[in-house]
Each structure stands twice: as C-alpha cells, then as structure tokens.
Image 1 (cartoon, rainbow, N blue to C red):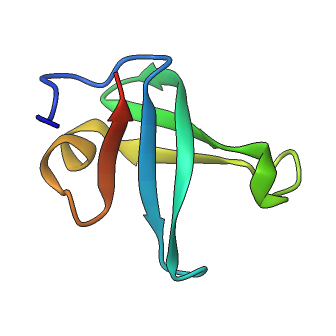
Image 2 (cartoon, helix red, strand yellow):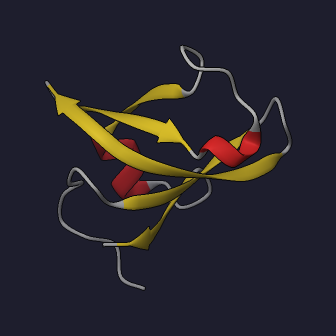
Length: 72
C-alpha cells in the first residue's frame, strides 16, 4: 500500500512499540500542530489513560520502520 500524503482522523495504522517489541494496531483519533494522536486497540489490555500516543505526522509518513498505514 502506498503511503498517503497526509494522516487523517479515522485511519488505521500499525505502530512499532519498542517496549513491547511488537507492532500494535492504532486508530488516528486527533491531530494538531503537525502531531497526531493515536489510540491503541482495546484488545491489547492497555488501561484507559495510557492507551494513546502522540506522533509527529512527518515521521509517520516517512518512517515505515515505525509506522505503517493499514486502512485509509
């Protein structure tokens, strides 16, 4: 799948999480000032309040070793 020109709310991404040593599925739930808010799927057992991660939009679009688009 080709990398999109921008990150949009509702897109599904896979994010590499070094502390877990695995890829986790996320959904884009917000964006502001060039940053994106990703929410991890509930199935991972991450407690509410710790289930979100901020990421730089440019990094998401350019670094496929950390972020991969799953569904537009």
